[in-house]
Length: 167
Figure 1 (cartoon, rainbow, N blue to C red):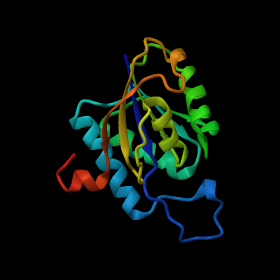
Figure 2: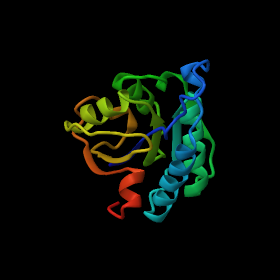
Figure 3: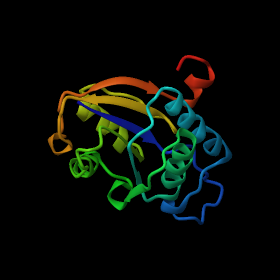
C-alpha cells in the first residue's frame, strides 16, 4: 500500500497581468494557507517522505512553505512535466518514484489534479486552491500506478475546512 498526498498550489496572484502564467507568485492568502496545510500534515503524522512539485513559481513556493511547516527536510523534486499536466503526466512521474518512499506528495495544478484523483479513485473530487487529498493506493511499487488502479480517497482538506474546524 502506498499513500499519495495530492495538493493544489495555494492561491496565486493575478495582479501583474504582464507576468507569464508559469511565473505567477502566491497571493498573501496563499502564503498563509500553504504553511497552515503543512502544519496540519505534521499534526496528523502525514509528513511526506518525498515532495514532487510542478516548476511553476506558485507550485514551488507552495511546496516550500508546506515542507517547512511540516518538518520535511529533504529536497523538493521539481518536475517540468507537471506544469499544466493531465493525469497521464502525473502517473508517469509517479511510476518513476523509488519504492523506498511510501508516502509521497505531489503539488500541481487544476484541472489535472482533479482528473488525477478521478482516474486513481473512480470518484470526482473538487480541489480548490491549497486543497490537499490523501489517497491510499493498493500497490506495492510505484511502477504499478495506472489509471483506475482502485485507489481510495481517504480524506480531502481545504484551508477553509481546517479554519472552520471540520478538518
